[in-house]
Length: 291
Image (cartoon, rainbow, N blue to C red; front, side, top):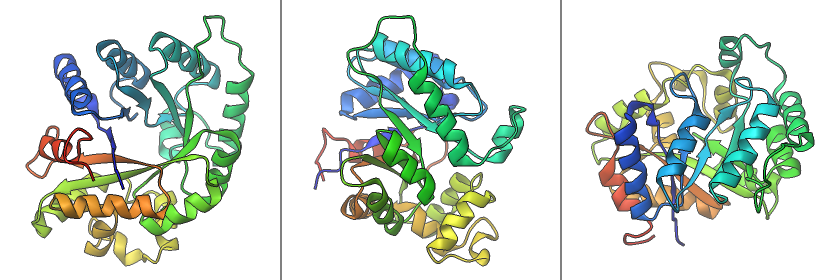
């Protein structure tokens, strides 16, 4: 089973020259797409535009764009503009994020399905007065709970999941049905040192550990409150972070494919410290040994 993963990376740590070099190197390695997250760094659509302008084959996705950060009319404009100007290499990844992010934008939090449904309604109804691309940019929704997954099945081209075990992937595929794209983001660290893997794994998921939405989903798969203490138990870290040698990392990704993921996106954690984890990117590259 071929993995052919995509890449998600927090590109805000790279200056313009390093970002261009990073994207071009991923493209040369044969990766399908690069996902650009949204936190409090660069504006993601601007970053996507930059990367699209400097590459020729790489698909670039917002992964994810927070629906509280901009209204749906602006998102509709960006979706059509980037799809047109890139020749179809843009994907609109959307997510409701979490209450603290809504509060940071001064916007009241709404129930996730209600918020995303209204957002999709506006996207569909907005007519953008610019050249129409040959095909609209796909829309992928970040979805972990059954209601958002059902919305993705009914209204989007696919769903994105993150920090979930293969059992969740199997359940997500059942809800989505056989035809929708299911992107599973797998954090991965190329090291056989358990202590180092868990140390960097805790840093990688630290921002998510206190969030109730993640805790609810983890509890649904057998974790307890004690697993969320002191940066996360070894059991939790080992469940959501793929670590080990190349074979072990591939095996974890393959487990998600066998559970129903149509695509894997690697969130590579550098075991040596800061900067892109090139040994892992090169090991998993589609132009490499395959898998």
